[in-house]
Amino acid sequence: MVDGEQVSPGVVCLGSGRRQERGGPEDAYALYDVHGWTVVVAGSLGAPWDGPDEINVRFTEIEAVDSVVDSDGITGEILRAIPLGDARKRIKAIKDEWRREQGHHDAVAARVETDEEWARFAREYVALVKEGQRHPIRHMAAMTGISRNTLSARVRRARERGFLEGPAGKPADRLGARAAEILREEAAQ
Image (spheres, one colour):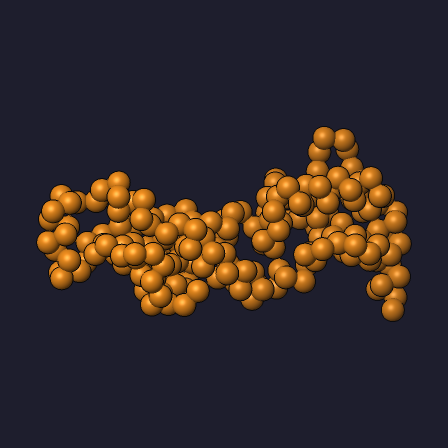
């Protein structure tokens, strides 16, 4: 993914990065020229999804005025030509970098295999619940880039393995004895 590359016929990525507009939350964006129209595809950095949540299409190229006049404004063809797949990849890469900068990459491992990793995962989950997160899995997904389905399965497995405890049907609100013991041992080292 290189800025200035042709994504498809008539569509060029002009750049991507992070921005903050009008005092709002910071977001990741990708900027395209789509058949003479400037298109900004953006996604909020703090959103619990990786894809875009905003598309802005505007005319800016005076050289392409004839094609815009011929089309009589934004058409379905222009909208279909917006490279959402490419934008999603660029936005996800920017969000992953932002998450690492925020220190969220170490909190939850991409893969959880050892008992120590399960205990650390349980600790992070319980910390979110205790700080009042109403949707801890959704929040953890937003901060780590790990899918909600994967995290939900991990919580279920952590309960089964004795790393998490709590009322059935509610978020686990405390560490299981197994996790507590492993974390105590880690802290003592």
